[in-house]
Image (cartoon, rainbow, N blue to C red):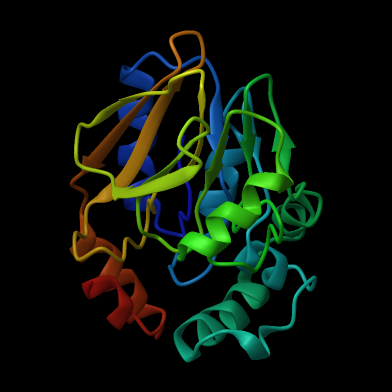
Length: 237
């Protein structure tokens, strides 16, 4: 499971190799394959090539294929989205255009931003979490978008929620009486002051979630961005 690749081929390659070694039998991606980084085509093609990979559309994916106005993006995102639009191959643009905004499995839902507003909403506050519980019917909803890994636990017996950041190599057991919203973090551009790529494994049979952080060649990605004259300051945090 992964999210927010943002055209970072080095990070994506490390993540996919790690997940393969974990023995996963299917892949879930919470969107934003493109944006910010220097390898949009390579990243889309790598994701497209994965057998049994279920992907939802992110806001950068939508903007790169003309489904979302770029005026609302920050200057870093807007600049690279315009560049991405120009270099994206037609078959990759068509792939992004056709991505669904929500996917529901047997006991999980995946979206990019939130169940209520899959492309745009950043889930950051307790009130938002409580409201969004009514927009999906499964035990757990996996999201991305904010680039900050966390888990929200809704305890039906207590009527409240608990929010906590995910730690490296942490395993979370999903209890049947609770519901969860889990942000799986970002592959290509984490924003929690840890530049390592994020990914996770969800064991649907054991209802266990395992979170990982991985080193990758960040300098190589930055060099490519410099060569393409892209703004890369965001990759420093």
